[in-house]
Length: 238
Image (cartoon, rainbow, N blue to C red; front, side, top):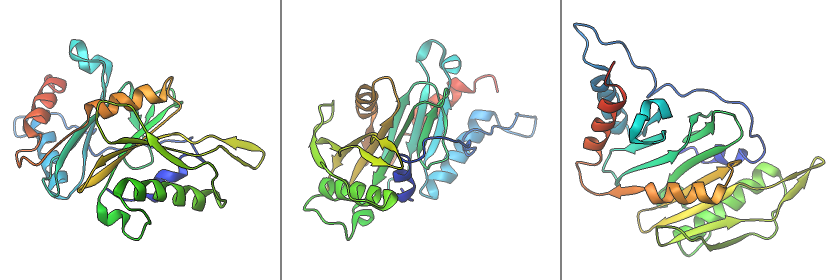
């Protein structure tokens, strides 16, 4: 769920990329090695025990007739709760944590969960207000100048308690910086979710699709059955 600061540099630098290989490297099964889907389930369990996400990029070809592909993320550790979400489209892992770049390099999307402890010391009466103030503070720190026109407004989506953070564009070094779509989902008292979308053909539409696919649970079984089913489908020939 950290680091947070790296996220706010995205508005300044939206170029360059490096693959994340945690969930991408799959060894070929042999007589003494389990099938690929089982290897990945073991890796996912290791990451969950360490309090980390398991992310898999499914291409449209891999999805076949069952979907259009996208990024599928699972946090299967019930401390404090389990979640899963999907970023539909054709993506690669980005350099920034929990962020993904489109294959053509034009768009970036990501999802960040923040717990109350991540927002300690930030002003605000609610978690949403603190998350919005943290976005402002981090951008002001990154850009070394104050922001104008900062506000939190309701954002229409499939999930109640969804807000948009926005601010006026910033002029710096002879260019105008327009902030990406920043959507905050209220999961009080446990957390808030920050969705960032930039450079998509319709940032708001993609954000709404991510919100719609977001699921959380306190069930200790988490989303293991769903992940196993997906891995068997995607890696059925490996």
